[in-house]
Amino acid sequence: MSNRFSQLITLTTVLVLSCSLNAQTKGNDTEGHAWWQHAVFYEIYPRSFVDSNNDGTGDLSGITSKLDYLHELGVDAIWISPFFPSPQVDFGYDVSDYESIDPVYGTMRDFDRLVSEGKKRGIRVILDFVVNHTSDQHKWFLDSKSSRKATHRDWFIWRDGKGPSQPPNNWISIFGGSAWKLAPKTNQYYYHAFYAEQPDLNWRNPAVVKAMGDVNRFWYKRGVAGFRLDAVDRMFEDEKLRDSQTLEGTNKFGDPLLDQTYTAKLPEMHDALRGLRKVADESDAVLIGETWTKNIEELKEYYGPHNDELQMPMNFMFTKVDKLSPPEFRNQINAVESAGGWPVYVISNHDIDRSYNRYGDGKNNDAIAKVLAGLYLTLRGTAIMYYGEEIGMENNNPTRKEDVKDPIGRTGWPNEIGRDGERTPMQWTDGTNAGFSIATPWLPVPASHATHNVASEAKDSNSVLQFYKQLLAMRHTNHALLDGSYVSLNETDPNVMMYVRKYKDEAVLVAINMSGIEQRVSVDLSSSGFAGAKTNGLLSSPISLKDAIVAGDGIVLPPFGVYIANVTK
Ligand code: NOJ
Picture (spheres, rainbow, N blue to C red):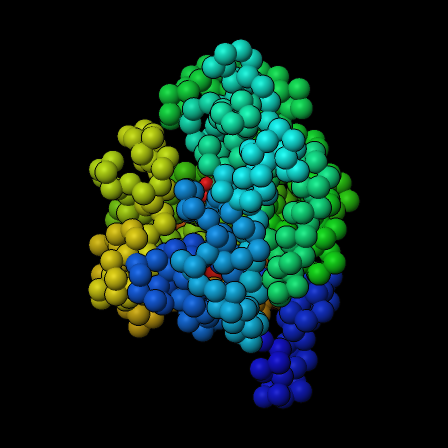
């Protein structure tokens, strides 16, 4: 961004923009924030974004062709799910070569072009780093399974069975069945936390640590700005391979539920993360974590005691608040605020139902999509969006087992229908295949593309897309939204979320009616040091609410209304 605009703008504008330019070029702004703390991240599932060569599957050149769209939307960094060579058993999360591109997605040239075109628009590229496992077709594993004496034997977790046809212990794969597979040639079992085609790497082996660090360096040299670390909590497992305690109940595949003490979040993981962070620091890069946690204490640990592990462990707790509940959201936000690390908010991704489905009531879904955006994009912290969220894309779940592409949806049907529904093609137009491809897309396009697509919503001032655009533009320039503290108001209100973002003598008020009933709320700004201040609407849903007067006994918010205003003394 800096190069393209710096020649065109006047000195005054340069001064005004100096904060964000610093964030792009030098790493830190005047508040000491690094570039990623003010950036808006956007997850792209590459199979489903844009298909440039018309084979029904999205690709890297497709993404490049939409960089202008992303720039105008207000995206600063794209995280692209894996596009490395892969047998595609888990659609790329089974990597057979970490340093190359799967031909389905294009070439290294296409990748370099994506990075350089991104740079011109101030969009950084973040890759997905599958740290826990490789594909069973990776050359490391092919060598490893070839002989007990192979160079790479100890790069994976091999053990003898407990007895004839008995795996080493009772561990269960996250994707169903035993987590052990017998390899007949050497008559030992290997461990796989996910599919059998995804053997777990042995991070206790220094050669693995070195090789994986080098993978990162390879991509940093090509201009990558960071990684999202896949399944970090699974990197280590109990060295003694003790049986896990059996809990009550079964998983979606019918396996017994097991306690995770020996298979997840082992303390050794933190040494490994510190190591990867050192490598990232060599290139001023950022590490994002796929960090599913039960509570804030667990999340806190991922930052590291000296902020020397992940800069951005994703807080998935919003994805578990499955109803529009101000008290629930408040609790989560207060917990994150008290944790000390930089908050990272996520409401959807390629593994969970889209937020549009999780929160929508079927009648007010667009208004509710704006409610969610109004919330997580005005909080202190970094937001990671999921492609299509900005146009109100919804799940398109398979209704028959034979249509399912995601293997867990076939083994777990009908309890587990898989993740196809949230991975459907991006909806660019209301035309054929939603403008994603002229070939038959790898997954069917939802009927909702007729109304929810980029082209139509770009023309509609009332659309979800326009709301996101305005919100993101504001988030990039408003000091209170960039750097302000979070002050919660009306803490006991069961229907309306209200808070102030406060920076020096500037503030923004956010009031969100999470109910389907009109709400009158009093607005007392004295606790935030703005007693008697006036508000000046910046953005709202519905649009007319922007001009609402906050006075006397407060403000009236229509059902699912969002009011965002500047507070002036
Ligand atoms: C988490 C990824 O997000 C998911 O899509 C994948 O199946 C598993 N990790 C295994 O890599």
